[in-house]
Amino acid sequence: MFAKLCKLNAFFTLLVKDVITMEGNRPQVSPTLATIETGSQEPEVEEVSSGYDTNANKEGEEVDEEIEKLTAVLLNPCDNFRCKRGKTCKPDTDGKPGCVCQDPLECPGSTNTFEHVCGTDNKTYDTSCELFATKCNLEGTKRGYKLHLDYTGPCKLIPQCVKNELVQFPLRMRDWLKNVLLQLYEHDSVSPGFLTPKQRFRVKKIFENERRLHAGNHSVELLAQDFEKNYNMYIYPVHWQFAQLDKHPSDRTLSHSELAPLRAPLVPMEHCTSLFFQECDADKDKQVTLKEWTSCFGIKDGENDVDVNLLF
Image (cartoon, rainbow, N blue to C red; front, side, top):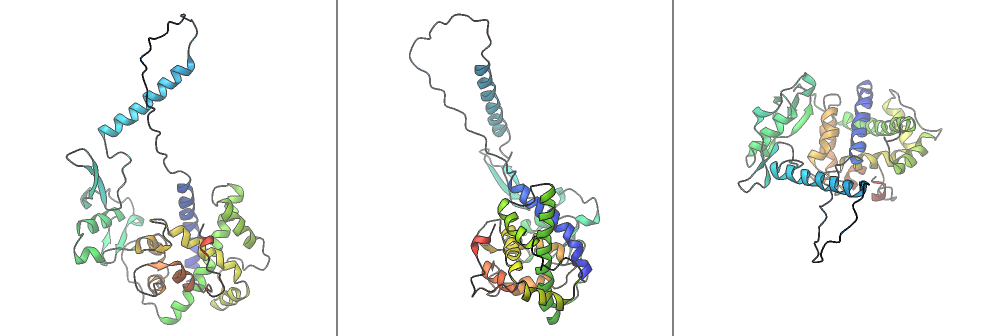
């Protein structure tokens, strides 16, 4: 079981890198066209010059480019118009873009079994596109309300999680989060971009601490001892993971869909994953707050260790 969780390090390194680099590469909104004012004065007569006005030519080219962009939007209003998963853009009768449910049959087919996903209805879907399109078309129904992405890969028998296994899960998960951050720190030292300066400053303290427990297939007893001995090393990794998931929207609570990128790949390898996240939602309102999240990982709220200023 320990070996299975270690295999996720490579996956999560790529996942987090994508999250970080995407933030730095969001498409920029094109500047609006400048308003050209015309005066009532007669045009001045200038001497004809054999020189070439490069500045005027450059400005003209920039205006032409903006006009082309504007024309493209008018021709296809769905360009750069985003819809949530399961929906696709479709202009209305007035040409205004809007989102409608996607036809599951129009989803691109999978190229391998790694693209298959299992829904909470215990049905294997060819791709996540097919699952979310199906859910969208079932909007307003009981089945549609209950349908979510359960985990990646084809549906299979997931063993029941017993109480002592549930207690052990956060010990491994907490250690894993710390090690993922340390891996990102090492990659960032060679090729900057994996961590922000603020993140790097925090992780550096953990990396340079000689007392830290290095990655390995450690026993539950050793993980528990290390958490007690090096408690402060685990505070930031727990906050960091929450911040990485809290994106849509960033409101200091985690919804089912925000938890999915972390939960879905873990379930086939760690059968207590789903129950753990359910238990984290202490008030059963289908939202995991920062306080609930940190409590699940043993971070002490009474000592001001739960800090919104660490959400970066």
